[in-house]
Image 1 (cartoon, rainbow, N blue to C red):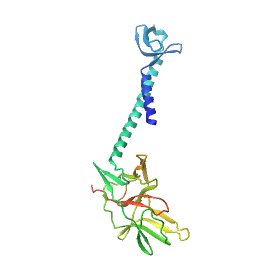
Image 2 (cartoon, rainbow, N blue to C red):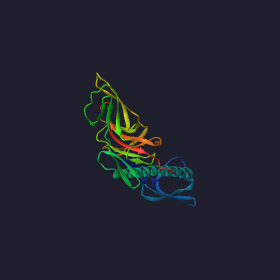
Image 3 (cartoon, rainbow, N blue to C red):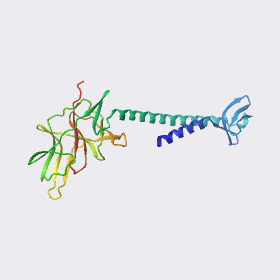
Image 4 (tube, rainbow, N blue to C red):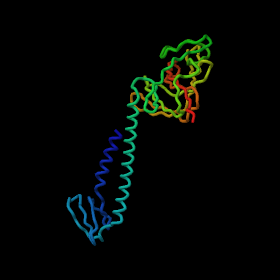
Length: 259
């Protein structure tokens, strides 16, 4: 709707730009389509009367007329530039959206290719051992502390660009972000967990990366990227609800290409 209003405003401004205010020496003005100075006369086309007319040059304030015309031309040029840039930005976003599959998941673009980040299978590690985390399952009844882990010391998805942008198509309205994974032997820790024995609540403590986000579609497609270049290491795109142990994880490894 906002873009449509801007377009109408630009069209109206363009139509108005075809007309000018021809100021008279007494401060009044005529709305004219065009004018020209001919010797000691000013000849103009009156918009009001749809006809050519003439007045003595001495009755016209040419300096004010020309000054205002230049100011208005500059304003219209500025508005047109803004509208053109916004239109180009919208086209670029639409082009991005067309490259991302509509299926829920995490993606990244590598040149001409759109690549899928494989969803990982998190493991809950407590003093009692490890148990597979079933996404959207009820909160397990544990006591004490634990970790949400991924098997393997490294992700199979290797990304060479520390400034890589990611695309996340949400399954539903939930929190999401980038998480720095912590090495732990042959596992990688996604987040620390603290289990409350009485309330059965879970305090989740992921090491979130400071990110910027841009919503690309109303259906929940987001572009996310780190505010600062990501150092080499293990990371994950995550989608979750605090305290519900329903974290979905798409892991990747940043390994900058050697120059």
